[in-house]
Amino acid sequence: GIGKPLIDGVDQFTLAGNISTCSFSVPVTSSFVPVFNTDYFPLTYQSTWTYNDLWNTGYTVKRDVTDSVMMGGFLYKIVSEKNLPEGDNSHLYRKNGSDYYEYISIDKYTYSLKYTTQIKKDLLFLKEDCITGTTWESPADTGSIMGGQSVLLKYTFRCIAANISETIQGRSYQNVILIQMRPQVRSLTDAWGETGETIDLHYAKGVGLIYARTIANTFIKLHWELSSYLVK
Image (tube, rainbow, N blue to C red; front, side, top):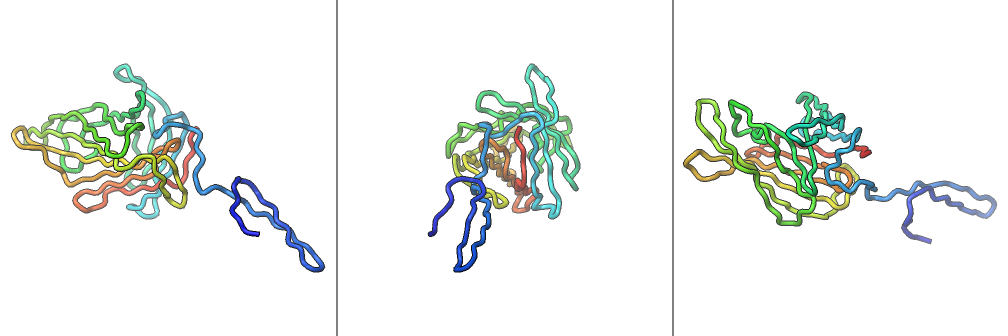
């Protein structure tokens, strides 16, 4: 007969001919990735993620939750990143309720400007209870760029889709949130304007970041797809 297996495992088959029989086994796996964590950006110690770098072809990016640190009364998880050829880095993240924050130099996610003096603060980058169409933005910050001009910077966020399925590197993920992030700038007297940069970030429940792409004025600056992970 014909049909589709419903349960993961190893199925045993026997074929009988006129004078002999033969047996063989077939492993059965679900097309969807099973998850056991309910966070869209897990921060459990020793969790690890590896990404194929589609911009720097042939390279991978590896992230690990390695430690934690208290700052300003908040506990941040340290995520170490090994990234060739871009260089190693570390990131600070925390969760509060259904919101996720990264402690950054506020100009981290734009190529359009760099402040002469760093402004460090939390950036709310993900709301795990968002629905399609949800928007939010970061508070505006003012800093000086080279030449002494004061420039304001903020980030806008939009939930492009929520609770969808997405296939990345041959693996299908459920309960995926698609977030689009856009930097905006202005002078002290002008209106807000787009920088021409778009940052697309896809998060799967129980897995974390599965896809990232940054485009600056039609040029790809970053493009990652999750290839393997282990959430503790």
